[in-house]
Structure formats: C-alpha cells, structure tokens
Length: 406
Image (cartoon, rainbow, N blue to C red; front, top):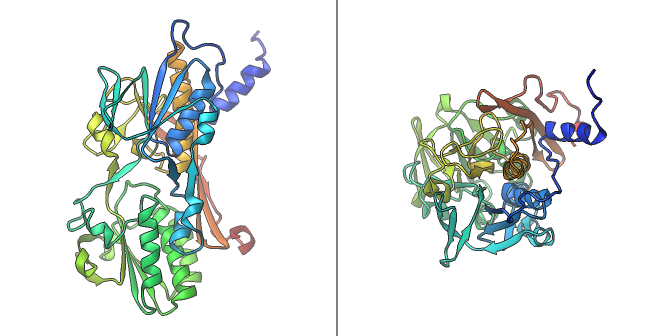
C-alpha cells in the first residue's frame, strides 16, 4: 500500500506543476556559500535573483545590471499612443536588495566559462559557481539593408523601451494630419510576437482620435501572426479607415529602407512615410554571443528542464535570449523561466536532480483603451525541447461581447 503524501509534499508537487518553485531552507553547501551571478535585471533576471535569494540564505546572489532603473516594455505601446507616460515604465531595484541580493550596476564585458569569471566594464571581476544570463535581445543591425543604429534615430524601432519609445511618440505627435505612418514587422522569431499588432492597434486609435485623416500601413514579413483572427476582427470594427495590414504574400516584406527619405522598399514597390517604425530582425544580446552560448540562429539553445546552456555547462539562459522551443519570447515567459531556472540551480547546488517543470505564458494585448484580447499556453519538456501541452492553450473568444473585451 502506498503511503499517503504529506501536505508539504502535495503542495510541492502542485507548485512544481506550474513552474512555481518550492524552496529548500537548509544550507545548500556546508563548506562555503555557492556564488550565483545573474546578468540582466529584466523580468527574467530580477525574478531569478529574487527566487535564488529565497532558495537559501547560503546562496550568494549577485545581480549585474547596467541601469539603476528598469524600463519595462509591457505597456510601452500605451506610451507611444499617448495614453501613458514613460515615467510609469520605470522601476527601481531596491526590493531585491531587501531580500539579500547584491546589486552591481555595471556592464559585463566578458564571460570566462572555464575560469567561471565575469569581467565588468571597470575591470572588476566576479567569480561564480553558476551563472544566469538574462540579457534580452539586440537588434541585428544591417540584417535589413539600410537599417542600422544611425537609421533608428530617424526610423525608430522602439523595441527596447526608453528613448526610442519617446522618440516614436514625439514623431507621431509632430506629424501633420493626413500623413502616412508605416510599420515594418520582421519574420519570426522576435521579442513579443503579438507586440507589433498591439502597437498597430494603439497607433490606429491615436490617429482616429487625434489625426483622423491619417493612416497606418503595416508591412509584414509573414502571412500569419499571434492572435491574428482577434486582431483583424477588431481592426475591421474599429479602424477600417485608419489601419491597413499587408502580409507577405501581397508584398508586405520590407527588403530595404532608405532612412533619409523614410522610404521602405518591398518586392512589390516603395512606400514613403511621414513616420516610420521599423522593427528589425533580432538575436540574443551581444554578451550572449560573445560568451559562446548562442548558436548559428543567434539564439541560445537550453536544456528545457534546467535552462542550462546546451553549449557551455554552468550557464543558464532565460528570457528572450533563450531558444525555448514553443514557448514565446515574452515578459511572462521570462518570469516563469526564471522561477524554474532558480529552482533547478538550487537543486543542482544541493546535489539533487532538477525537477521536470511545467511553465505558463499568458499574453494580454490592448486593441483600444477599453478592448483587450488574450492568449495563454502551458509548456513542458518533451523530446529535449519545450512543447505546448496538448489542449492547454486558449485565447479570448472570437465572438465575445464588449463587456468581455473591456
């Protein structure tokens, strides 16, 4: 006869099923405190640092982040459309210090996996037993001919929240009514799959409200995208005169840009914009490339149980930089992956095998101030990658009443 599980065991099993770690409170190592360095203080890195600090008081956790305040991407599309100020996107790191995380505001210039050492811009070095990389994405400058960092000052991407977000907003505010706004959307993968379409919706709302003779054209390098049926249904109802989406098969893929004239070239012709928002192809952040944890795709392959690099042992990659199978690149995903990676690292340092997780991603998008849609999925390791659990996902109902959308 099987023994009945204790309440503690039952709670641990339930939490692990949703990627929510249960934390050992006893010392992880008797002889010395293991050192874990976390690089990057976004949704993934900050969460990993917090959960590692909770795992055991004996784990020495250091978070390295270039900026003293974090600028969040979620809700930044509301900043672009004039419904939110950039100050509302800024968050400090004080609460991490309160739970025992050591904060180092600096830039990582080199990672030596063999010596288990991180070198900072000021020449200082941090030793680690385990390293968590949560560096986010960088733009692949030049992957779209004509679009480099200088061009982004004229045709902002605004795909990293901050100065670019404000620049795009100011351009929309300054343009004349009757102007054309053009958005270029890349092929997959990139940070936040539904993000361009929420942005398109909210720019269209801004135009309809403040510059009703203006129009947005979305040039897309693909024919299918996240929450497509929900977005297109909303566009037809709300913005028939203000938003036109052009997919790959009808000439939507931008092949080149001319920044000086704000011209976007496709296989089918040219489009001249008053304001151009060009979202270029992306890859894992430069430090991940330098560290050798990215493969030829530009992203970082990971073990789906522990998020440990498949290329270099002892380094765990979470968030947008990770090649995480079916799990999309989103803030929610980064948060879930951070909890799983932190639990796995605590297990490894304690001499235990990491537990097989399940992870959740949920994404909400605004189409208008009182109109939202969502999608969700559950993921688990299978065949060496993260796959969506069959039957687990779902999205907002297509024929939902306005009360649900609101």
